[in-house]
Length: 415
Image (cartoon, rainbow, N blue to C red; front, side, top):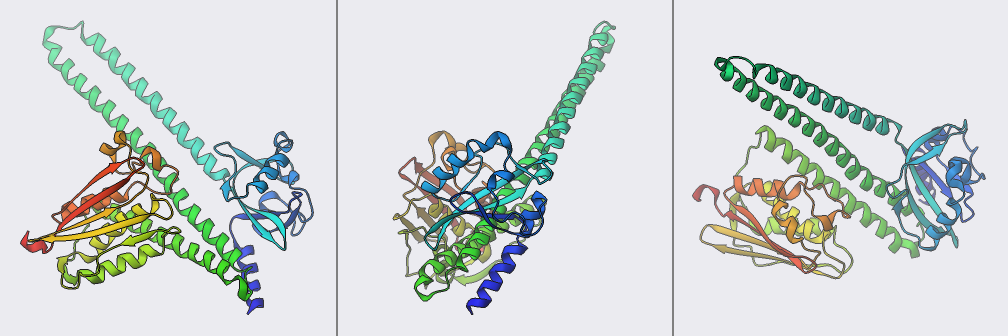
């Protein structure tokens, strides 16, 4: 069994699309995978035993040893660069842009750092082309505006009978400016969206790969607790990716008008158990969820999948934006043909100045930017609830907590 695990670990290690480089405390390379060797232009095994400095541009070599030592002293997973452009050096001396994440670990009493390196040459080129296209678009706007202004100036000297034509041209100019501005905004939105999607998928996938590799190292019976910790991380990351995919599918269907709600009768207790079960996978250390257990008699006639999506989003946000050892309260009330769900947390809250934007698509509050997220979940939840005859509101105080309130008709046909 141990041999099988080792073989599986080696296959995953060599099959990874990212370059993987492991160094010891002296910054000597102890192992690399095929992707890393190809990326830097070296033959198989050629990098082993060499100093990490041969892969680093000379202008950064002086400060790098001290940075690595400080990183090992305060070891934690993080991205390299902190907003700066990073470059690697190939065997032939050429430089290329990279993105790298550092993952420290200890084995046999020694500290090691595993770096996962991605060649982002194509991404950088795409960004350059987008900037160039935007610059060309700006130039076209100025050129068109200048031409229209010259035309208008000429028309001002013409007979008063031409005033109607001048008015038409001004309207055309405004329409053209608006159209060009919308085109520019659309390009920027697409760029931001693609960048966000790439980041939101790559980060959890890298975490899954790292956890799989590290879990394979804990094969002894007394190491099962550490092994289970990595399996828990994998389950949490997979659940996060599944939620993102559901959100993206909802956006596409809402925008194209292809949403077809399927109304069925179902017991509320079944839905609540499913939502809480999935939420427990993502709980932080010490977090607890209080929820009602006496819902067996309540039966809804709604779209079960959509209601589950909305409640999972609200509880997921409460978990994400609350600290460890905090309590999340999930309350349910029924009155006549209305059911009300309240999700209360003890988290970071929403700043007052951001609250008016909280349901806008892709918007994220200023104090939430350090957390993973797409900024679309609340927008989708609100639109779905309103389509189903309900509503979504909230109350929040920064550094105290937030309460989201969702209402729905118990029977959609009787609203």
